[in-house]
Amino acid sequence: MTKSDIRMPTDFYFLFSEDPLRLHEMNGPRGDLIYTFSNDFRSNGHLVRLDADQPGSLEECRSDTRYTSIIRRPQLTKGTRICVLSRGHVGLVTVREAPQERDDGDFITIDLTVWP
Image (tube, rainbow, N blue to C red; front, side, top):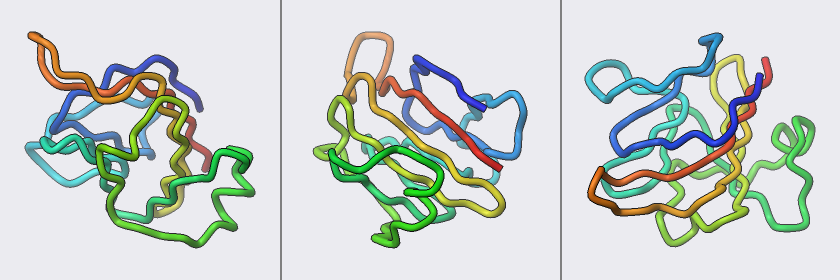
């Protein structure tokens, strides 16, 4: 399942088990992909920031084990790809627009693909 051009505000998250994918405000359980108030990505699972020459595929996300629990704002540049490994699902985040601070709030623009 793929969702493109998502404008993800701070303090929101996705649950990969939902179809269709939708944003949730941080007032309940933590999600599979979380965009925090400090403009970082976090997850209840594992995150892997892919190198520029790595394919953004399901196989690559499953095989790369450079796990981290946080991807900080300076690493969230246009074109950055991040694998998200959660219970039962694998996600691929592609940053379309780096974190922005505007009058209508802080957000990042991403594409998100989720595989079962």
